[in-house]
Length: 454
Image (cartoon, one colour):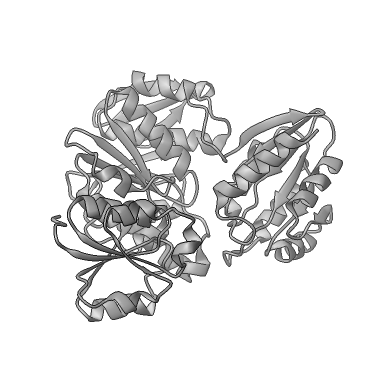
């Protein structure tokens, strides 16, 4: 893609928008940046863009800056169905997302990982395996480091591993990973996508440009993933912790096995995988299949699986105080993710639930809590507290406390309820935007407040 002298409007000035604007300016594009916020709302975060020569169109609707524009680059936070996007297309303006822009300008091999849960852990783990194998690796995407921040630094021999969200998939067109993977599919983001059918189709779009020379990796234990694999042109590899698959990664007699073509390798024992829980065994199997598709040796994988301790905000032990362990799982932003966190608990647990609404059902979560002997109490916060309370009542579970929007009151209640030998688990099953900037902000606040407890 030649960006020199292209007239580009970048919409949405979060991390991905700022990175996209910097990359485009470095390639000689004429860039106008747009956001509904005004410049004073950014507190100096845009100073570098001004020094680079970007034009500012802040506080306005995007269409106020369409004249003379031939490319519109969208933040993933902006839904593709917005009327101004359709207006841009009608005016002949090319519209792409930040992920698409970064992928077009990235050199080297590209791996894309999506799914409802486990993306950040699997993406990080995959990147660590590639690095251990001697590949210069960029770990990017929805993980918090935009692909446009690394694209300009990439080289033909590099590997880029991208965590891809369903929001990002809305605006891709020529996105072409040599290896793509879907980890699992459960109900999520219906406030954005409307139906599960649309949500699944968004995830499947990462394979649209793959050819017979590429590889698609799927979770064999997930029925939706098995259906998604039908009709693809790419070679299919599976991963499974329940069955022995014909091609891919699986468990046999307590060991992770990788079989590709006629070659079968033993990677390691399942009890040697450092990150805990059955869901993390699935993440490890996925990373083995993905890196195996790229030719990484099992011995390299084993060393990383035995040492990799996980990612921040995902079942992260913060501290132990008065015999109570505090665990940060702020990345538990949907029901299925929180169910997986519950499965890893080995102590009597006080669970913090609630946040902004994704239009998903809390009934499966409430039913699991009602039948899980280690979940002794729930503290409910945020916009969805009443919905979760209703679901718990319907499941016959009444050991809950309402904490509204007061995070200090929430932690005080947890401390009073938790007993020595137990734990406090923040795994909200919801997005964070009612009380926090994002899940990372929520996790950091939780950790700061827990570390301040006397």
